[in-house]
Length: 462
Image (cartoon, rainbow, N blue to C red; front, side, top):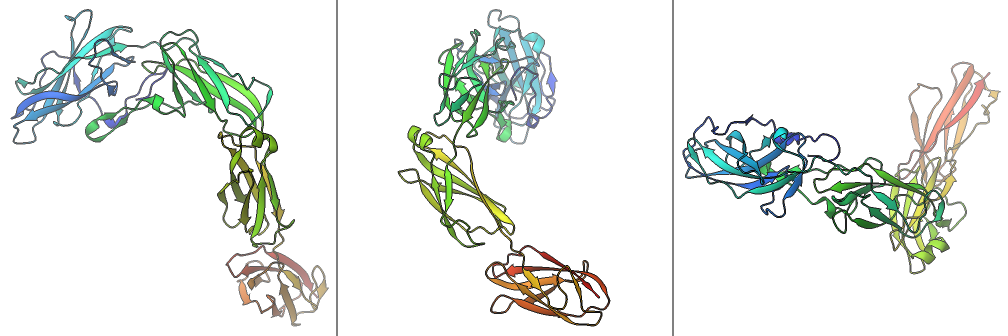
């Protein structure tokens, strides 16, 4: 079930509820055992409260789902049973509403819905459950107590930051401190926050036999923070999702029924210098392992020591992200073998001890991995030879460890692969059948199987 300002939708796993609003309804199929008092009682898919002084709070705009697991003892078969629920205002015990769920397998949850028109906003109700087996019934369960809260907090929360003023540039490196206030709503239990405008939905999973598995949303400190007192305030200490630029935090208040207030937001600007990235040689060779030195921005290092770097490569044979630990002075080294056939980029961010992630540093290089093609008879972009006149074409690599070349003299013709010699070159003889314009396309392949960039060699046969 999701909670908030809009209508609630019961999880589809619960199935369609077969309900009867009759005080003495009983299941159509009689059981042959002794009914036992239901257990595993829930309302609104959350644990019910058996403490009259501490009722649970639930939204019930579409009615309130109550449920329990019926029991039966001494049965000899797979008899179906029913569960009867009765509810009443604690201030008027004689005004009882009864609903039932028929034909239920013992041991599984039996949900039914108390109708919305029987539940007044702000009123506290008690409810009980009993198992029904033919004309036999169990004892009633201990009462559960629930207060209906169909009214969400009217005001958006207040949101301020003492160390990152809004709409101005702030030097990054320190966690952002926020103070959240209830905005005058006296029933606010806590707050939901996110760097994304769409705030997460609070839900309840359904386990085996239909048993709800509610969790305390405030246990998830990534998105939720409980107020210091009902209607009170809370503080947050957060690291923005990006190292620099405009940041916006979105917050709404939640009451005890998880009704959400209008959303408020807080925007601020962050400048966060990136680390430096320096290769051991100015132009690393294609595929050659090269050591890169990573150094922190001095300002970030002074605020909180850099403890690691995230190094991401792109444009190579296998894009990857590498996490590298920093030394005591914040520096680190990483060895990379760049193998992008047209070039490769390296992106680096630093992470400080306080969790701050810096802006991105970029380092990149380009490679020409096409082979060199030469012919004395048929020069590139020129004319020569004639129909029936053979010519030799020599392929020479621009990168190391080439083991073969693959070529075709016209688009659509089958490719031919020839091995490279000990000097990593190759020569092929070719005789044109007719005069005209030709396009020789050739690429090399390395020992590790990398297919390098192709080269187009054009010429005209006289």
